[in-house]
Image (tube, rainbow, N blue to C red):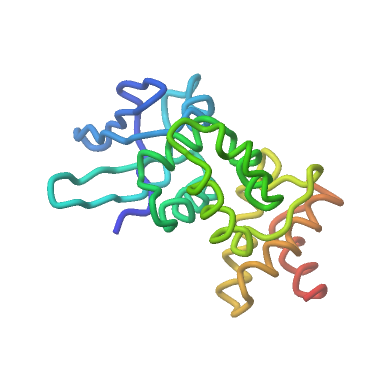
Length: 193
């Protein structure tokens, strides 16, 4: 239902942020990764994940859509709830977690508080193919200016291309030349696909 919220940071801790928008303060659970990205900001835009239970309506906020996507993959695994997924993203950066899952590093995942051997193994089995192969040198997250990449990906998906191959093509283009304009990224990606 909610995609993102923009507003002023009324209060921030390593566990949550209160974002004021039109006189309403929204309580958003956040990870340490998002906290680090927000520390010096007064105005923010956070991407939202809603978690609705019988007894609670909770919002989780993420600085980047890729972190939210990884969070959603994590909660899709049996035995991993929203708080556990947030703990995982607070214990490891999205890059580290992505690499640990894609390389099958059970010990690294098991080192996270609340994750046992069976849960770590289940996580790897269920998400390894979804996340895709990654090597130590590759980054799951885009370079600092990922707005261009997101706009290009959105355009390619709207044009009917699949998300995963489009993302790989955009990653390759930006790895070679991070300064490209969105229009150039889209044109080059269309030639490459």
